[in-house]
Amino acid sequence: MITGATGMFGATLSKYFQDNFEVFATGTKDLNFDGIKNFMAFDLSSSDYSKLIEWSKPDTIIHAAALTNGNYCEQNPEQAFAINGISLQKFCKAIPEQTQLIYISTDAVFSNDKHLANETDCVHPESVYGKAKELGEFFLRHSNCDYTIVRTTIVGKNLNKNKQGFVEWIVNSSSAGSEISLFDDVLFTPISIWNLAEHLEYIINNPTAFSRKTFHVAGREICTKYQFGITLLKSLNLPTGLVKRGKITDFEDRAKRSTDQTLDCKRFEEVSQRQLPTLKQTIQELKDHYDEAN
Ligand SMILES: NC(=O)c1ccc[n+]([C@@H]2O[C@H](COP(=O)([O-])OP(=O)(O)OC[C@H]3O[C@@H](n4cnc5c(N)ncnc54)[C@H](OP(=O)(O)O)[C@@H]3O)[C@@H](O)[C@H]2O)c1
Image (cartoon, rainbow, N blue to C red):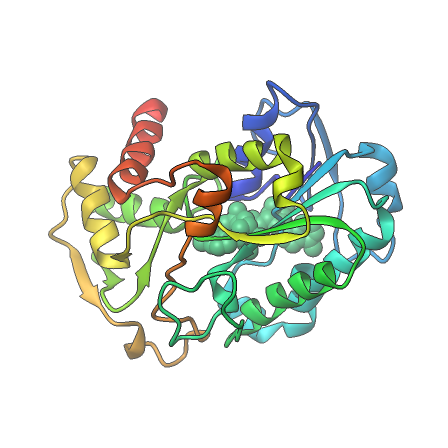
């Protein structure tokens, strides 16, 4: 079962796993794209998850649903804690211990001063979004569940045409000739949603090595959001002249977000014997998916 199937990552996961698994997909709204056979609308703020579990009878759950808008989380902390945190406690109560539960978490559980955070570093979230995701991790660690926490920093494309994520905003703005500002003081280690889906498949098929553990699964190269945007636009042969260098520190009203979102993923590479992508590979995957859509 995949939660968040109407969102950027959950939608791609639901499609990706269709070939080799029986996928049960869920989100709050109805799907507005094709290719997913089993879908049920379900609000994760509900108190009882038994209807969802009885419908899907999952061997594995990938929990990709979340309230991801940092400003919205800041203004609606109860909702953020309910969906991003307490949902994990409810899943643990609703599923048998042997159900594999993969929780998609985030770099936002770390504080600003952590460069290339690894799995042994202390978490110290500074935003409501990060605190709520960390609460979800807390429930898993204190449960009897067969969980894997995957902290990541994803970039990709929405199958839902009405949604616009970070990448689409950059591409659409350039195509429309609109000026945008990208942070040149924010570092991250992006991985594409398609690449991460492959690593999740490996985790599902090799559960023992990952059971009751936390892994960082992101890109192996660091860049700023500005560098990422310029490289992406150049690869798509789109104009870069209207992309300005911005500073996150200039946005006082914004929800607090770390200027260093980098993750050290050596542990995952060692355990899985798999290489995580370079920036060039991540940009190429985005380009391939944009080319395919055109
Ligand atoms: N995008 C990033 O930069 C990033 C970075 C690190 C980690 N992550 C994590 O990766 C995961 C996927 O992110 P994403 O970018 O794909 O997010 P997204 O596009 O915002 O999608 C979020 C999904 O969560 C669902 N959802 C929200 N509230 C819900 C509720 N009350 N009940 C049931 N479903 C609910 C949404 O359903 P509806 O649309 O139907 O309401 C949507 O399907 C999240 O867990 C996020 O924390 C994301």
